[in-house]
Image 1 (cartoon, rainbow, N blue to C red):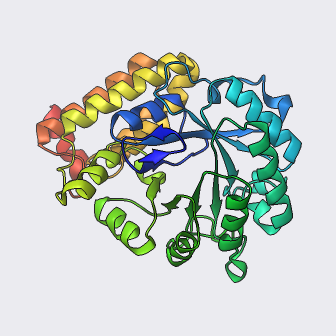
Image 2 (cartoon, one colour):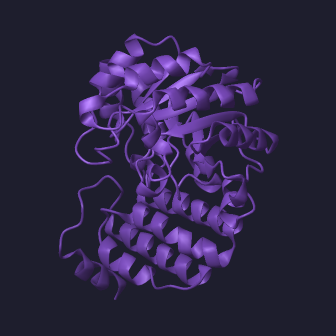
Length: 346
């Protein structure tokens, strides 16, 4: 996919997710097939630039390009300043967040709360585009603030008129948060009336769903978020299916173990032991979700205090899966599987 001077390997995007899409996860998803990966949301508040969290979120050392950074805020000048700072720090694409439904974001009139004020949307987009004229600016947003007032078409028209290069649209309103099913009719309407690339987002959790959403919306690409948690290989699965019509088999337990191990090593190296072990817990839980014996494993794993103990537990869990011949993608475990694991280990 060609996009604003960037040549992407495909039209599959990793969605920005707070607390998830850090540099280790972005790099992993790119290696496993994502054409582009957008960073965690970075606040436009300059008072937060020096915090450890912001330093981690703006660390792009060695990252495979294009480097896309999402910024969030409600003040046009602060957003413009944030764009300039992040471009100076290595960002090659600036993405603007108008989709986050979280209360702590919406309560300061940022994220999806901005969709209630179309004039302010225009001012923010204009200020950011003018601040970084050599850098493509993209926008991620929802179909509206509430179901009774979906204004995604107008927001898309504003975005195009203000010089936004690409839009990613989540098929829910802020009122929906992540409840119910995403709807794609609004995305299809936006695509039909837009002259810039439109990326469809929301509930894309597999290859067949990806193909169906592309066909229904006519979108130029897909953005995948929660479905990539613990399944970073979803990008290669979708890319292969879209290109060939054939489904790839799920990874073996051995490959899942290797991918998980590589991810953990990057997390420990990026954050250090104390923070790395804490952040790794949620990723390990996602990697093992639905696998046999996962519930008991997660309960014990979450109490482990250091890298050595955490890795030993992960190694043991996947070793037991391999002994049992289980692989990700198989049917979920039976209630009796923890007992079977104990028998295998005896």
